[in-house]
Image 1 (cartoon, rainbow, N blue to C red):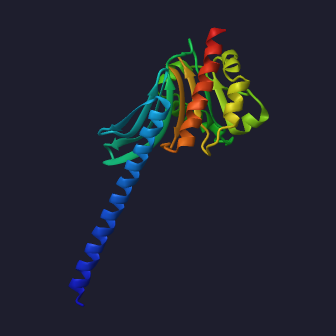
Image 2: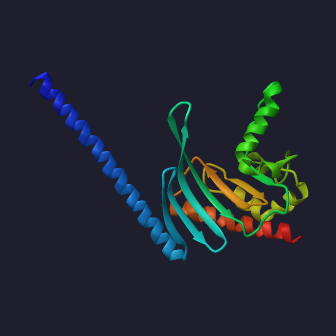
Image 3: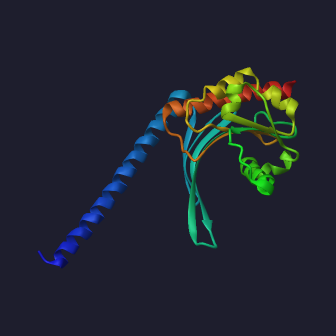
Length: 228
């Protein structure tokens, strides 16, 4: 067999292998979408797929809340490259914090950055707060909840008394019982209530139920916080 023939065979085999991968991925995607449609129908949720230039994934809605799992693309003009970020987000604006903000997120190890410590902290907070940085003026870390909770989560706020009411026993128990490896980031602010799982698009039935259950619990706690 000549080198040319061998080269042609290798190219054809590679093309077929890549095509097979695309077929398997597409089949898996269709299977997941079908399962999500069935889950939505079973629970009375509306379901929609998301496909545009910057995002792909799916979205669930029911009454007061929205749950979406997306891959979002960000293009870098300087490096001419594209970064894809996966996120699952539960959101409701049924209850809004009148002012200020409460953040409950994964516990981070204390690292001494010397004079850069404050800068690093502010960068991390900006990532967690997003576009609501004005509501986070004066935000500080506070120690709330049990030792078990504080081993997994950190609480940041500029309204400590409201944070204490928000992080009640029911919400603490729900956070401690969170079944996924990646802890959620909970944000309660004037924009509403958001629970985000960074770096993951959830699709398993038990994971979706877990996030919706946590959202419902957080919404009840938010209601009690604002009502009082």
